[in-house]
Amino acid sequence: MKNSRIALALAAALALSACYDTTTHPVGTTAGIKPDPVLAGTWKGVNSDGKPGYFHFLPQSDGSITVIIVEDGTTSNDWDVATVTATKLGPNRLLNARLLEGDGKPIADWPGGTVPVLYRLDAQGGLTFALPHEEALRDAVKAGRIKGRVQTGAYGDVAITADPKALDAFFARADLGKLYSAPFYTLHRVR
Image 1 (cartoon, rainbow, N blue to C red):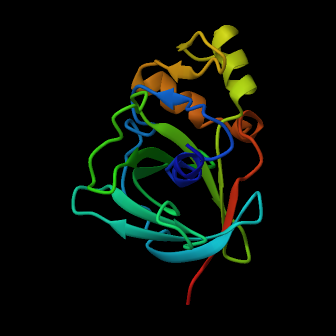
Image 2: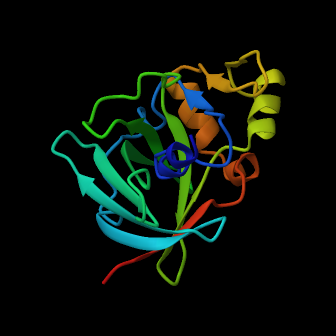
Image 3: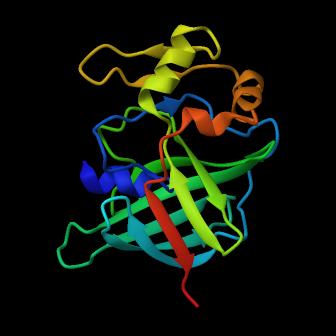
């Protein structure tokens, strides 16, 4: 699951735990989901563990983006494929990420829905990805700030089940970053 977690962070999904907090509807459906042209191409960077990686964003004709992630590249397990859609809600740029098998089919044990990945571009052209902070998102659901369910089990994954309008309003908040962990990947465009 480590490679999967990292891949989602773009979309992708992601290496720091086995947890996948998801939304039942893609974030941004009321505002518009469309490829972000700034993402297209190849990016190089390091994850939060200092491991190098390349991300290649390939816009598709259906409005989605296929992301090929290659980390380190020394073994056959060092690559992943994800499909993402992009949206901008208020000051926030988000990806709806879903990890795929190498043949482009969804992962069989995927929990359903998409992972809402927050991405940011800095003034120097850096691109970062962050995942929802598990405890903060769980607390938001339990407090009724967003409709969802906290699953039972060791990880208590969160499935946000709010309707698209409420979902988009929640993710458009200016303080959304408080619900996200520190970035797990920092990338720069390959020239």
